[in-house]
Length: 174
Length: 186
Image (tube, rainbow over all chains, first blue to last red):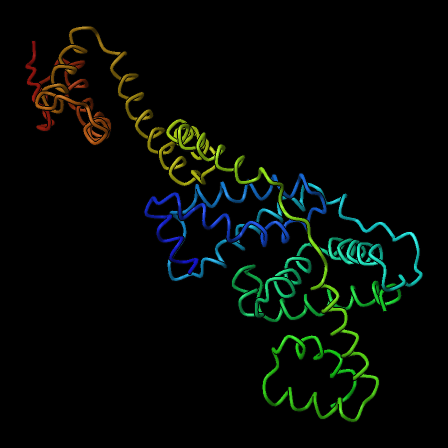
């Protein structure tokens, strides 16, 4: 369906672009937010992303999935952001290592924040593959296509990312 | 299958990325090994917790701002295109064509320079005659001095000069036969 929108958009139909924005804005915002952990930065990056899609629509090849095209641009944008703000992505140790009690509304907020903190503390490559795997339900082959990493690299990056998260989050979440 | 290998494959197992044989091997091991089963549960729990996090959404004016920016982009697109093209000239890898052009220019300058240098040593009458011969030979029928004519002219300068000017200096008849000058002994 997205490919149809994109075809129309490439043919100069601006209403199709509005549909693409509607369809993707939440997903892409969530993807970017896990990199920046900052609402304003995420919104700016998302805007930049859609402008890039608008400007570079002629570079899209129909044999490639539109989804992949968008996530390729997004991951490149996130990479640039990561390079600029490398020092800001260092994990600040959570204030306590005690398990968060279950049940309260605050608990959910805190737990989400904790998970986000640790995801954003991952190195860029691990972060991008874990985002695509967990939140975008991409297969290893698709991740490899989007990121340009080989499939063995993707496997290894996912394994390392999961190990890191397990090690850091288990004492606090489970 | 040993625990160490199984643990390495668990991540791929929950992502459904194992081949049929590997999958059955892992499942057989999990039936026997409690530690690996616990490890698998932990990974699944972690995965579910990660999925369940709430992420904020973009602000209410996001689309409005985006479309106004895109509208501006359309009006400025021609101007931007020129700027982008100019910028790309400096960012593109131009070393090979630039180097070739520099070498060509150096060769042309060298030959034309040597021609001018050789010509400057002669008296005015000889200079004029050589100029006339060169113009007749190379430039008479061409309205535009293109790079090929210029290169040919420069590479032939030596020939034009060799026989004619030397002959003129010695007040002898030109014997080169390559030029149109015909000077007889005075």
